[in-house]
Image (tube, rainbow, N blue to C red; front, side, top):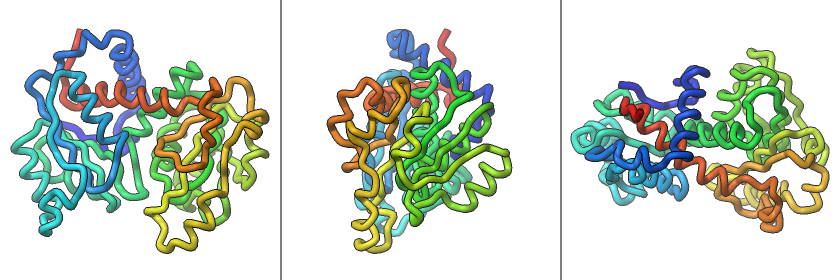
Length: 306
């Protein structure tokens, strides 16, 4: 039995196999329609979510399985004080696999230590979001045809953005990757990520404040929202929330083959006028998220489809 706590839980070879499986699922959905007949997925979401929860559920339903769970800690026994360890022990009696999102870093790891079923980390605080990273990798590979020799721009909340941290961890294992870190001083990438991941692996990167300065050199622009729920006071959030807005004028500065990704939800950091641009890939990215989670469920349950 294995779990997914971080993108690093899979080797590069295993990641490539997972992405190959996701592409085969996209191409031949009928072949996988009954792969998980009789299997149950539990979604334990202690924190609000739309795409991550529903894409996990859609993935299991597309595979012929069923789903159960809760979408808020208020509707679970956590509101009565039940621990994550006790919750997962009980869920292990009901389901075959579990996806958990929690506001506290490390909570899914605690669950994995006490579970007798595979546990998927569906986001833990500002730490990791590995299934979003798998989605991002599949999106980039499908759109660009590769996962190496690229310049990736990461823009917005790089301090609290768990999607950014996970994506950096995954991409540094591919050759020829360069990052442009675009953020205000207050939301810079944490020092431990710069030192322990980028510097340690000799990954080239630049830190800039102006989005306009970075756009001409990018293969992929990964936008993120400023996350209100991560701020300790309203004043700091209001001051930072409109720092970056990608609009039609700025898109004119970008190469014709640069794609825009966003883990969603967006607030106003990408103008709706950009949605019509063929380089806007964030809604395709959401669709790829279902295929890659289908592949992940099959992999963790060790279900093979010829």
